[in-house]
Length: 207
Image (cartoon, rainbow, N blue to C red; front, side, top):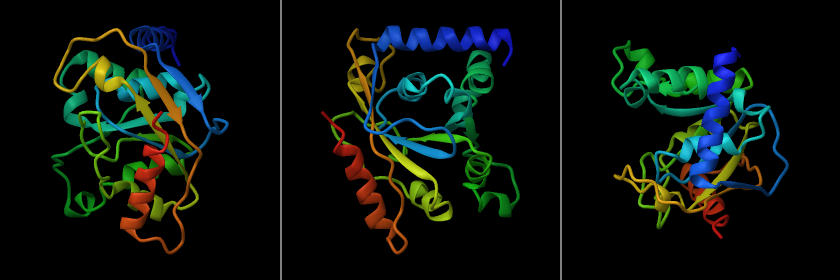
């Protein structure tokens, strides 16, 4: 990591903590290696808060999964995505072959296979923060194809109030990032049962 990247990382982590007052709480010891952090999603700050809450040694190998069209909108976003957060960007309108379009999870699987951790928001879009919406099936397909990868629920408290959906005004409140115990998919577990269990694991972390 270059000196400029180190400076940018320190600045982003400091600014995120200053703006949100985030306190990380771990129900199990943080570990390096391939794993998937999955969280409730209600604010533009969610990914940055999880990333800033991780121990410094884990951050360089932890990649948020996000839409390419969002991070490509400005030079600043592109820099942060590629040089600071190492975002794994997904093209929602790919000009690719049919085979590539039919394998949208392959970049995520490739990242896990190299030992990277991922940050996912399985609701698929930002909610209002009052409840957690049903999960999309991506988390299930990843878990089914990499059953040995630990899945860590992360409940984000109060971010829907600090930077609500549709607002650019930050409200000075404190938030928490609560990391739950890792879970894995069971060998015969159905998609619906797994997604419900994963969502319940997240809801149970709510204070």
